[in-house]
Length: 577
Image (cartoon, rainbow, N blue to C red; front, side, top):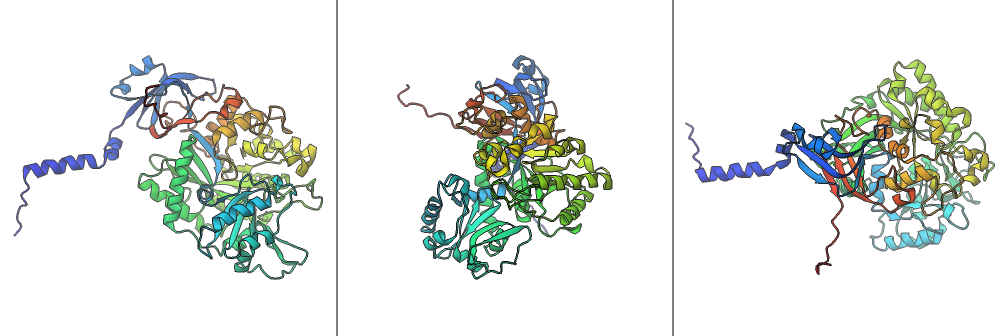
């Protein structure tokens, strides 16, 4: 026989109160909430230059823009929270259309080698880290660039190995397409002995010295020979790194990142963080397509976005060639500063065609890394064949990532085939110190030619390729408008053409990025029904002097109408001054 459980009335009241306060976020989601943003400039990005005084948001979507009086009178504004922009400028949430979240998150903990002016400085930074780690622990680093050194040649591992005899070391070059391993790492990878000069690595290269021994420099696919012997980070490390990276990215004003080459462990982590309500940054994930790939591996994709559109998986990232800085980009003619070199293909033409066909027939959007003019032509040829072979292929909006060097005769093929050029303005400015040496003046004039590849600038997508470059979108906006490096005077660039005005530069990081992800029906503009994603800065990035962009900073970041980051208030003088 069961007995009734008698609970005192006071305890019932306490339990009810506790339940009501346990999950305010959940109750908030059950009732549509409204917010009125006002007190600044709001750039709508509607193609007509509209700037509004206020914006009304409800349940994560834009209701309307207009004057404060107009919006305050709308029924949806009844009881709305108010956010004063305090004279700042809100633009549609900035997106980075090409980045590497896992690599950036790891780089925050690795040895930072960016800006090292010599090989000796690289070694010194690595030694400083190694001293803090137990013997035998791997030391990872990223960011070295031999183009900044006086000798401008790839290094040999000897100096690094002599300084780090008790730790295996792997240091990625700034572009992520080459790495330097010390002797301990080479031995663990089976590369420490005399090498057969006939032995090659598909899609990569192990550099050898005069004794036919590995110099420690590994190009593109050859880096995997060392990577495979490094222990993989556990799930809790991936999570810690990502959460730290996410905080940095939203603090820069980014609301969305197109993650190029998402691993399965990373995708699992993102799904878990979304379910736990810890995903503040929208992620458009493009699966890593360089490993084993067949129809079975693509089952279940593309994954449709969740109800709040925080995570989507629309496509697959593939590689055609390497990078220009390490002479791995595949060129039609030899490098001007290395007459015997034309770069290399990371994926053979036949394999790339097979992979692209699998991706397209699965209804997934292909995004192919292609930097050199030969690689770009190969990808364009493959896309042209798929346009005929796969019904609706053009509707997938095939992407080419980087498109840094494209032969002039191939420029018109981008718009003709409906190919989205996904480009990085800061690559043009970071490379300017040596790009003329690599390509010669004739090819350089057509490099980073975003105007030629996307005559309809609204279909041009901009990103940073972080951690190769800084994720700060203000640097990208500056580079797009000036084609100069921060600190250089306007006109000093060997790449003067293709400068954009403020509105076009902003479109690349907003509506253009949304177009590239096939999400332009809901993001990239502050129109009714679109997501209320805002990046708030002190200045209007569409009208301010470009140089002022380098002095500005994000003030607030809003995703789905929710403030996910706000700049701390300046400390007040306790004396009242």
